[in-house]
Image 1 (cartoon, rainbow, N blue to C red):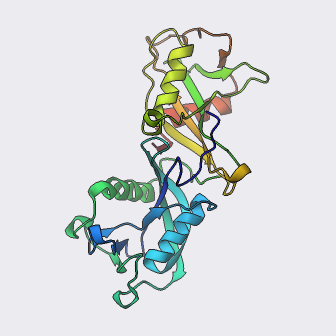
Image 2: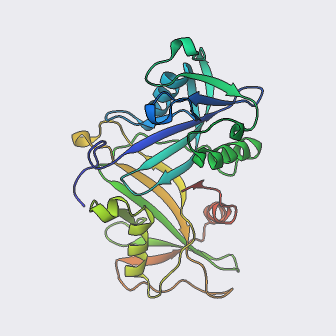
Image 3: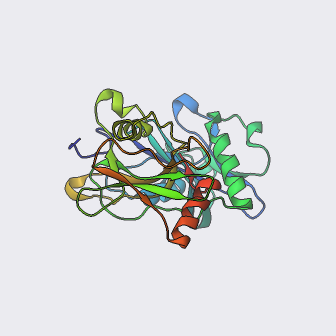
Length: 290
């Protein structure tokens, strides 16, 4: 695809934040929208053109709760393809005053720190419960390093793939593209109506099926990092996701299947530190879940 990503036209990005206070209360917002007025939810909303992802999250938290905050890490990337992507953050409060009913507006009625089970509240939707669980687990024992967007431009929505093949002997290979300097493969999300709602996994599977001899059935995608720049070239709002996935071996001492195309090759990772870091990420699922 050559059409740049533009928010509000061919893509929708949503930001959401999970914040706790010192007593482990979670920051909840009472909705003002007519269709869910009076229900409770986490601070969330649509990103606007020209905003960075973190700035959008901080704006939504400020508008809906009255509090300033600092992003700590992405907790999850939720997506249905370019048509809807939600960036869920763990954040911490840094200032401001909690919004009261006297300050109700179109953004929210009020905000409060909820000390108990959020299910005791009339919730707008239950899809926040897995995110609250992820946040609680991250606070107890972070499964991955703090992961925040890097400010680098990208006109399209694409995935840079670290496709790994590891066997039980501790050997590991990484799939590389061979055009020019060897590099990690990059795939772009298509912009047809089907692809807009087809999920980020669709172009990944297409690439693997085109270049590997057997249907590879890769493991789940995990996010290592991402790049986005507000107001990128031509006003584009593309994102490049650095994604880790593994091809399961067919036997304990297996080697990776030879690619169909000379455009790809497997590179054996022999440097001990790098091999250890990749294996640790694979075995511990030490990535932001997608």
